Length: 518
Ligand SMILES: NC(=O)C1=CN([C@@H]2O[C@H](COP(=O)(O)OP(=O)(O)OC[C@H]3O[C@@H](n4cnc5c(N)ncnc54)[C@H](OP(=O)(O)O)[C@@H]3O)[C@@H](O)[C@H]2O)[C@@H](O)CC1
Ligand SMILES: [K+]
Image 1: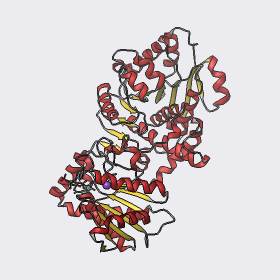
Image 2 (image 1 turned 90 degrees about the vertical axis):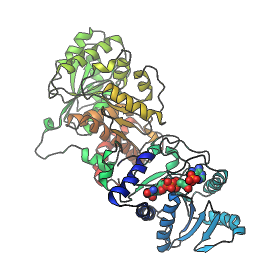
Image 3 (image 1 turned 180 degrees about the horizontal axis):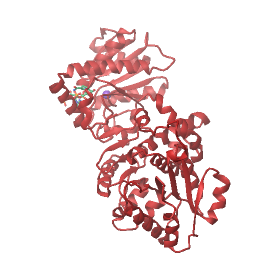
Image 4 (image 1 turned 135 degrees about the vertical axis):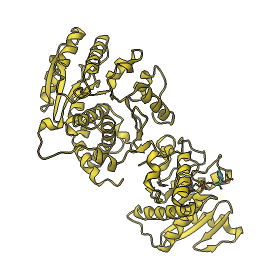
């Protein structure tokens, strides 16, 4: 599913008209109908359309036009519709216009009795700060929503006042329960503060031909898309079919990292997992990770070339290599990584294991000048904002604001990597600038070890032959999906998840993509 900026959306509309004769009226009629259908499909179970009291706030442009078409559909299905035309200060209640002198009073009553209030004030055409009387209107709605939890607020296309490119919001904007956006999600939805104003996101089909969207470079990750990326599991197979993953992860203070990453690689279907660990660490894993195999490395105080050689000697036949989670930082370990990278660069593309570098793998590298020139082709790197800041030599990287998008795009090209920049809406960019953004976030994931799980999932997909950008994309989506399953199955809220809770839920999240709603 494509994500658009305002100018891309306008261009799509212009071309739809010019090349396909899809006029603005046709698109608006499609938009209003599809918004009505999605509205009905997403009504609370306690609600029925017949007799439902719906108040529409209608703005002066096409967003208001969408609202009017949607209202007429709902009215035909038996909803009790009131329309408040903001610019004209006019109120029509169930087809009857109220006299001008009672509009304020009647509007107050309509707000109080509404089951749903629909924001069709402004969409992508907002060109300046909201006027005071519009802010005041939205503030009344916000107060009513605070007073009455069963009142639902639904935005058409976007919450009024939200900047659809950047996610900035007007002081008058209010948070919605649902946003029914038209044609494509808008870029600003994925960045804060806007992200918090969207509520549940629904995407209405306005009948734009798919060919028009083919040049768009930014996608929202969806379950349906990820389903298509998942590797085949033929009946005629053995563990060799699904690839081997080697992990250079874990150290004395962080032993769990290798376990979490390795288990996650197996949970997405990799055939064999090997942990490259020292003898000291072995006892820890041998008792907790029965499925793993091991490559024994010299202790951490051994010469770096001995440590690197022990790993390199065993790498043949491995389809994926993960370096970093829990590895620790030291000049010796950095040397080991450099020697492994040198070896990987010397291999032909066909036999080189795909590389994922995470956490301390990145921290060790970031101490070097032009570290990215040392990476083999098509490496996946997975920094969180702090690690990204170090890789960019001290730039402050936001966890959720729009600047991170441009930064991710610039750096993925400059570094020629598949960059996965973690955050509430994780961004993925490939070396050519193709971009995918994860809509679904889960605050329960903000806990130690979940990054190790993500990195392990990516390497598990790589081992099965999934292309690096797709492997990272599938892992990001499924990681959040698995967290949502933990929430549901363990009845926990936004806190209390353990990274290891994700493990048994990962395979279920793969299965669930077969019937994803989008
Ligand atoms: N076009 C199409 O084919 C399709 C369009 N679609 C729909 O149309 C929406 C875009 O429509 P749009 O361009 O008419 O913009 P919209 O957001 O309704 O507002 C413009 C109006 O608001 C006014 N105005 C602006 N800022 C203001 C402010 N701060 N405070 C007050 N007024 C302000 C502005 O006035 P002006 O600046 O001209 O004085 C103008 O009158 C899009 O979001 C989607 O819902 C879809 O159905 C798909 C097909
Ligand atoms: K709106």
